[in-house]
Length: 595
Image 1 (tube, helix red, strand yellow):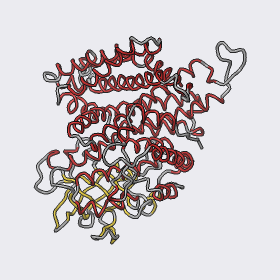
Image 2: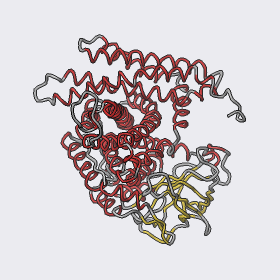
Image 3: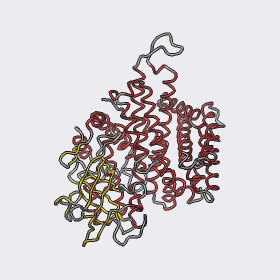
Image 4: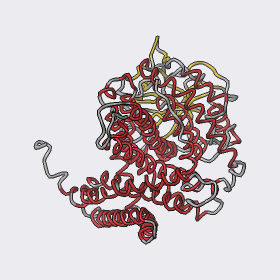
């Protein structure tokens, strides 16, 4: 069993100083979210993470979810852990109060989610998807459907899923074939969905599936997709459970990681049709599903951060205990944390994790502003900012999470490669994050086409101007560390600007070359914007260094971590920009036969 310690001090620093939590709690609807309340929520969520979720993580990985006699049984300890969340109303942490939720800001929920995903990623997928279902129903469904389904989803009595993928239609949702035929006040759903996370389980009395399907007269492609609520167990108008719906779990997948998360194949309508309820209007299903998907993508980005934090904590602890050889410059055998290369790996892990946390929390806070600000202009600006960051957080944080988990294995050496220590599980679990809820390439396509090209690069250029302004300010500072950070950030933001200009000039005449550059561009922007958040943290920490009562060691650590990132990771912007501008020319140079 591996332990987990919530990094509460780091998290609260980012929430208050980078994400602007104090400003968010003054927005309409969040006034009751006081500093004391947030502190209590994070402390208790951290206790649940370390005392309830982390202890069952490794055993859950070994046991996995099991399908027995046609029903899915979750791993030992799962039911008790889930009941802990229900008892504390944790599922509805950010859900509307009118439907039984706590109505806290999404950025607070993001911090809670990070801890739970760190402690037990396989378990935490269930409440994460339920929260996504709540968001979609609350935003897009009729008042009647909200009244029927949201209270029991927010309470955790029922769970939610997102059912998109089919065997012949993975990322290409325009190719889905699941059918929906109107039958009185509902529809009859028939078809099959695959890769449905928590598509069946024994944690709740009902599972509410959000299913994409086509009506008989729907237009082809994505314009003909509709969204339906399909409960596992039928319900009456008062929400009482009736007989089972025509939904069956055919099988669960055997996977590389997240073994205790049941990934189901679901068959709808084998006995005449599963009862489903239309969400919103016909043929707008993809639009509605993106409400859920965008929150899920942010949360998967948080998973990349979370699994990296867990791998780092374990590697740091191991390096502090493991005696192996005599470090260079040492007269005696000491723990491997004193070996310069082990220190290099730990510094890389720590600095990237802090950059990831800063960017992810800032993105979550932007969603809060986009939804709650009383000023329409502010809401729209925050929405554009959040939409720009979303694919970067999802793509960059998950790619870096895999690399950081791999470094955790490396620090453990041979013991990391065997399952005994648990380090290998973190790497296996992390691997799915760049795939589900849209691969990194899909995030890059979204970033390029919907977020940069659609507005002529205005939103991105405005953000890069903010980064450049801070870089210039720091480069002129009297503190030598801030000067170094500012100089590196100045160079890297210029690389990002060059790549952005190239994209805007190239895409109109060569869409394939622009597409080939998408992932390197996403990684470039993630690297630069992560460095920007660390630079902000370093400036603030330096300014507060003389404050009475401030934790001087903590503040100094923030500056040195940002300094390391600026010296090691920001210079990579040059090679990433070259991959965008020059490397994209070579991607399609070989024919399929030559590959």
